[in-house]
Length: 210
Image (cartoon, rainbow, N blue to C red; front, side, top):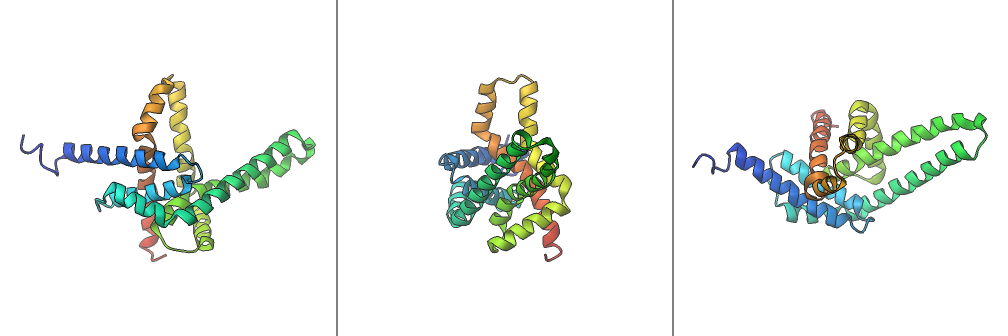
């Protein structure tokens, strides 16, 4: 019994990490409510998760809000850019498929390339912003270079949340169950798994002093 109550016991460690993720999930969802702040919320969440994975045992609330405030302007600008670019790309694809003559369908190729670039920015920019200090131009450059050098990981990270939703759909899991999981640990849990992949990529470059 005394062994079970020891702080380093696997059960205690699991429950402690579970509580951290639930608390982080609540902070993330609350700070995403204005929609405009989603970028800052993502950046802050990644910063906390990276510290958890590195076993730095941060104070979840204090670390989250500190990161949220520090990265707010840049993360929000980045989020607005991604949303605006996404709207523009969707409009271009709609025009190609529904308004232009079929002979112009090849125009979808460069537009699809833009989709990949935008996904790359969405996948890597916020975690990079949370971990490194650099200008926006350098951040976007690093984002693109890392995404090209790690295409399998980029695709996996991009489709992972969609894959979970698809599994829930084909398994006929009730919508209320999905919403309940999302509101308790779903968002932070997914980002926690993704953070392991991202951190392994980042540390690979850090070891090369890049």
